[in-house]
Image (tube, rainbow, N blue to C red; front, top):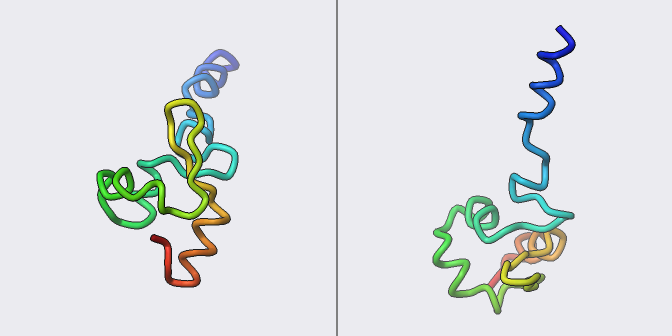
Length: 75
């Protein structure tokens, strides 16, 4: 029984693999959150508040995005 529980723990996906990386959205997770296409996020990523490029990957600060959403002006 102990061996099966270890296998389950190994197969579970850490939270940062689901688009939640240290309080940031990925391009895909932000598109899902806003219910828009990923292409729209890519084309407007420089104008989105809280956007930052980490290596080759763009991340979007959750707090900044949520604040702009509440004010009604994300882009």
